[in-house]
Image (cartoon, rainbow, N blue to C red; front, side, top):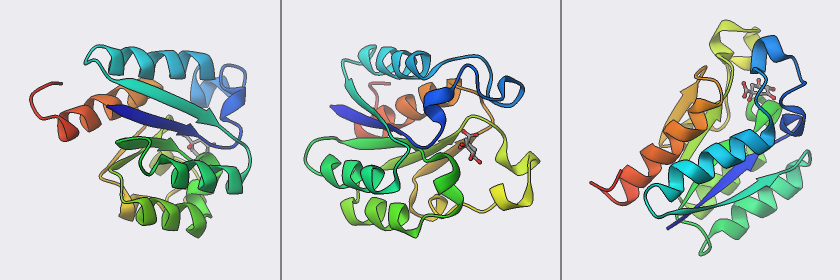
Length: 147
Ligand code: DQA
């Protein structure tokens, strides 16, 4: 009954970072929105942001036994990190990949994700509301009928 919400590099700058692409919502707004979505169903969230790939790997590993599902926006590591993909596969928790922007409408290098193949679902281009959809999806999946 806990979801781990992971945000990767540069997402600490949400609100001021390229607002035309990522909007004006802050990381605090993202985390509050995810917590509210979970709380509506009596679930809790644990939130973590890091700019460091290894810390993200550590957080995914630590989710085993501590969380029931993962929502992850790995930022640019999405497009580069075999280590994050392997960590998600290793823990085996249902995971939703979120991107605030529509990566498929952007540069070619953002079209490839190492994470999508190990994700249950991918939510792209819905803005920060994507985190809410991800939480609702995971709760419905883990606790059918409650979302
Ligand atoms: C992002 C898209 C990535 O390509 C980019 O590197 C980010 C944010 C998104 O949420 O749209 O840092 O994951």
